[in-house]
Image (spheres, rainbow, N blue to C red):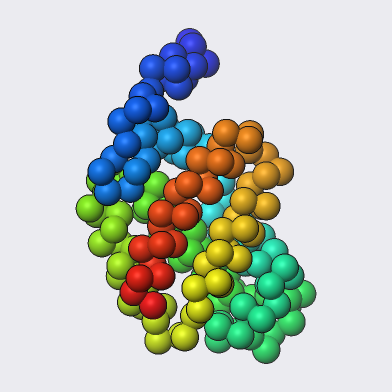
Length: 164
């Protein structure tokens, strides 16, 4: 019964009702929320995988972090690093949980941008992070899911960048 309900929900969600603030449709929100479920099962582990891949692909981005001098191999077991990774993923989880409230999402992202401004983070670091998220998720998500995540991350990071 669960698969029938899930399939019906997917096909019954609208694609022509973009949120006036985020531009995400009902279908987009559904796809993001359902594809997030496997990631949510291990927020810390997936956060560690994400940031380690980010540092591997874009080593200069590690300079934005307090653990910039810690070798990546040691970060795999560093609890302070794990705590930061968890924080990143919990923030993402909060955005996903509130996809139906565009104003709240914008407020959360504004706060995030202001909090990161003091670190001197450049705009391109967020483009690189988006690329990394998509690469990590590509191992278990469909093309439609990845395209929808790309759409969400473009919106989210454009708000954050305004406040850097």
